[in-house]
Every structure is written in structure tokens, then in C-alpha cells.
Length: 512
Image (cartoon, rainbow, N blue to C red; front, side, top):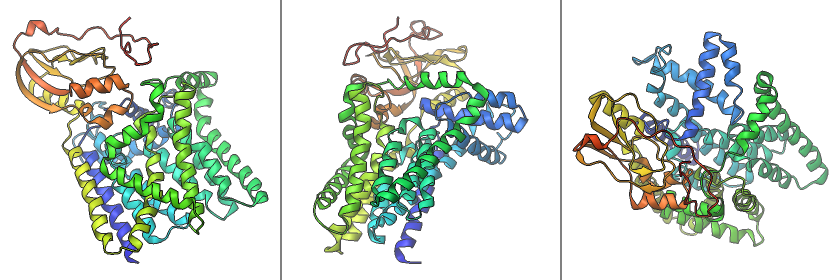
């Protein structure tokens, strides 16, 4: 095994261990999308117990349909690992979320698969071992590609399908064209928010075949694979639901509206700056150099132009849908597919820079690793609302509930048994209208709320909401109330929210 291959293996093992460790440290069920993992758990439970009617009911959910099958397999692994804990009896529903860390750890291995797929993609496009090594090192050091590893979300699984489709698109074997199309369609079925990767995969597949006749034949195979995968993945839901399945799909397609359409053009740069910091800036400069080289004659110009066009398309298509069509808001998760494309270009730039400066290689690699360590370390200390509330309930019983912002959807707790105490901000804070403040009293426990971390604010919050969260960074507290009578035993009735017509989103969250 060559030194570069050994280095790749070490990088994959270390990345996998870090991601699994992060997953096992908690933080599951923070985002709304994580509850879609529960559909897979319900499917696993229904099939395991032979309740096919219940299985069919769960298959009626058309959004991210293929992730339900992935989640079902992960749930089987989670259940197996749970047998080594006191929570292996899944006839008790409360035992399932207690081992959610196992599920996240298993899902996090898909992120490691993506590192390997990007390496394969670079090599298939013509990059040498050293250049491909820089590419995968940059991606492994990406903070945006790391911190989602603790969450039960479909984003990495969908991206793995998209990257696999690009690898097959570069294959000289015409029979691989249908695999490329099938994987592109699977990407969409795993996470519908990555719809723009499907046409980009098809265009990339066309560009990879300069011969017109071969392009026509391979395109037919690509489309056949895409249609076939779509039919296979949607057939169970349609078989159980019929027309209701399509109605649910149409309703879901109009629900991607949390945030602000008009900021789509600037969203990617702002999010990535907060997520990646100076390492992202270095990667952007290196990628810019690679794009400059793409304009000049050379053996590498073709593949660099290919990465450049993919990057441009992955940026422009969501912007067009957001700013132009006012259809889908851009989120941090929909920006993540830009990261491997930037790394493919930046890896070339770093490789060219160090070719004539070999002594710089260890120092540059060390700085990338150091940046990753500095970005990753705080995630292991982060406390999430579900874990904070569970600890409080275990130690103090059920307390009152308080949120430090108005306009937020309250989560109804169990009946209060400790009226002298209040737990504050132990939930996802959305929407955000105005800062309310904290109840007076003695703070017994405190932890920074995850939404005080800027990248988490880019998953549905509008600019005005982000400004409020930064002006008043939310903290989770357990407070011994100075005036218990000022805090109600139960939160206000759940608000119903109206869409705002104002461009700044100021009225979002106003109760009707």
C-alpha cells in the first residue's frame, strides 16, 4: 500500500471515530427533519411485529421517501446495539430515543463514505494521488461537513447518492450510465431539498461524453435508470395511498418557506463564512486559482471547468428557485453540496501551490488539521435542549416552562410538579419575534443554547431573527423562581402563524 493510500485510510478511520464520538455525545431530535427518522423506526417496528397495516400507513409520507428505508435499516442496527444497554426492550416506546446516539453514530458513517466518494471522484476525473489527498483532507476538515453528524438527518445519505452518480458518470463503461441516473434519482428521494443535484448530474453526465452518438445512447440509459429508481422508491407509498399519496406530495412541495426568499443570492457565502471561518477563505482562494487555471490551456483545464460548472449550477439553481421563483428558501443544509465541489477545486490549487514548494506541504497540512480541531472541539461540549430538559426532569421532576423570545411555538410539557422552578429555552426556538427576557430568580443550572452558535441559525430563521438571536444569545437555564406566580403553570396556547407580506419578515410569528 502506497503512503498516500495509507494516509487516506488513516484519515477515514479518524474521521469516522470523530463523527461517531460526536453522535454518541447526544444532540439528536433538535431539528424538525430529525423526526423523519422516526418514520423509519416505525416501519422497522411494524415489520418486526408483522403489522403490515401500520407499515403501509407510514409509507404514505412521500417526503424524503427513500430515507425512510435507510432509517429502517439504521433502526435495526440501533435496536441491536440497544440490547447491550438497559433500554433494549422496544415494546416500551420511551426506550427508543434513549439510544438515539447509536442511530446517529451509524448514520455518521455515511459522512465518511462521502469522503471516500469525493476521493474516488477526483481520481476518476484525472487527479493524481497527491491532489486527491488534498481534496479529501479539506473535506474532512470542513466544519459544515462535520457538525451534522450527530443529527438524524438525510442530507449525507442524499449527497452520497449524488456523488456516487457523478463517479459512475465518469465511467467509460456505457452500462454504468443507468447507475448514474438511478443514483441521481435516489439522491432526490433521500432528501427532496437536493432536487437541483438531479439536473446537474445529468448535465455532468453529458459533458463527460464528447462523442455525440455515445452521448445519446448513454443519456437514454441515464434517464431509464433515473425513472426506474423513482418508480421503485415511490411504488410502495403509491400502492398503499393511491391519489392521497400524490396530494400529500403536492402539499409538501409548497412547504419550504421558512426564512426569506430574497436572501438566496447571498446566503451561501454568509453561511459558509460562519461555518468554516478562515479555512473556508483559504479554500475559496485556492478554488479561485483553480478556476483561473481552467481558463488557460492545459491537461487539467477540462476537469477544472467541469467542477466549476457544477459549482456554479449548484449555487445558481437554488438561488433561481428562491430569489427568482419565490418557491424554495435556501438553507444551510442546501448549501452543503457546494462544499465538496469547492474542495475538488481547492485541492487542485493547494497541490499546484506545493508542487514547487514541497517543504510547505507538512506545515500546510498541519494548519488544516489544526483548524479542523479548533472548529470541531466545541461541538463535543455543546448541550442540546432535549438532553438539558431530561437531566432537569430526572433531578428535579417536571418544572414550569419559559422561552426568552416571543412568537415562538411552545412545546407543551407534562403537568408541572415543581411550581417553584422553571426551565428556560429547553426547546427549539422558532419563530423569533421579540426578546422577552428571563424570569427572576436563582440560576441553578445554565448551558448555552445551540442556537447561540451562528451556523445553526441558518436552518429556517430569517435575517431579522438571526440578528435577534445574536443580540440576545439564548441560554438554557434552570431557575428557582423569585416570584413563581409570575410564571404560568402552562405555556400559552400554541400559536397559529400567518405568512408575512413584509420583505423583512418582521411579522412572522404573529399570532392570529
